[in-house]
Image (cartoon, rainbow, N blue to C red):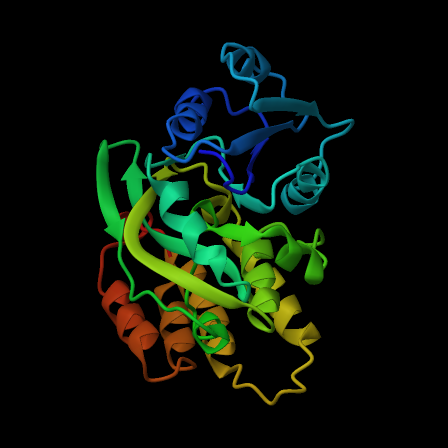
Length: 292
């Protein structure tokens, strides 16, 4: 489509050969045609490069990192070589619906909009089933919702590059919560627009970074909270409550029911506390399979 802004799609890949083909195909299948795919090969040692080279489309651009970079450092570097007015992110194990970009781009006609996102599906690799990630969608100034444990899947995010640079991009010191940190920073000065449609698929296969490194997520959330300059006097109690919930869930999955019960006592009387009580009643064999 002529006269439509260029979208840069960032795929940061480290040994992602197993699912990479489907991810790339979902970009090529977009109804919105003015995009480029920045494939950031983060020192892969498998067949990722060969799979990428099997596609013949001049919109696909390959870059090899000189050294292995942590996730958010790699994303920042990939963005530096991108040319798009807007940027989006797709991990090598996830994929999009064909209408993702064509649904999102028009909302940037409002120059105050910095990020557009949507709902998405969880796809469970083992059982080959999908489940809707369904939450109420918010638009406008959504900072208070982000600080109330409102999650935006980065696989659905489309970000105005000027907005990204206005907050100095991702904080590369994080391994897990860089998405959350970026969204909160963006929400200070930019409007968000949420689309109540399912425009992407998040593949759950047991090796997802957020599942493997929950202890690190807790440490990073505590660091974020400690470093937060709360000059606006914003209520951060829900962030503290979420950290306590993560600690509860981590302890419970390790089989320490009594210690988990003691953590419940520290939770606010809200949905997370009710959820924790219900989880405490489940058999450990089931709890081990649940994502927090």
